[in-house]
Image (cartoon, rainbow, N blue to C red; front, side, top):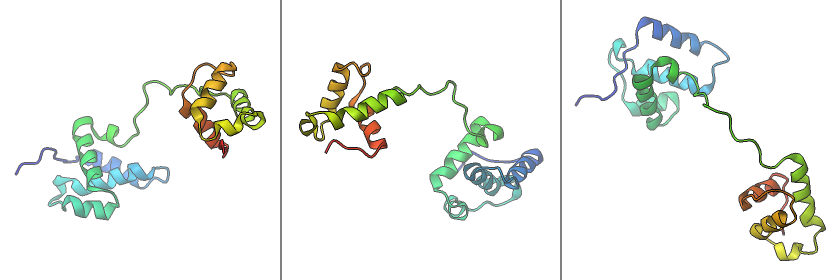
Length: 152
C-alpha cells in the first residue's frame, strides 16, 4: 500500500529541527512537531508505526497525520511555526464602563427577581436603557460570568 504523504528530510531541515529542539524558547506544540518529523523521516531508515510514534511523543495519532500532511503540503517552516492571523480579532464589544453599568444594573433593580436566569430579558433591558447598542444575550452572560455574578 502506497503512502499518501512521505517525509524525507534533507540535512538542512534535520539541522533546523535539532536546533529548535535544543532551544529553550521552543513551545511544546512546535517541539512535538519537531519530534514527530524526526521520527517519521524515511531517509533515516525504517520508521515506527503511527501509534508507537504517538505514544513516544505523547500526542494522538491524528496529530501525527496532521503534522506530516502539513509538512508535505506547506513545507518545514510553515509546519514549525504558528499561523499568523491575516487580520486582528474583533475589538471587545463591552468596554470597562459598559461592563460596570451592566453589572450594577441587576443589583439595584427591583426587577431582579423577575430576571432570575433570564439573560434575554436582561439583554433587552440593557438595550432599552441605551446602556449599549444591540448585543447578544451570550455577551451579557459571559460578562456576568467573568465577574462570578449570576442573576439568582
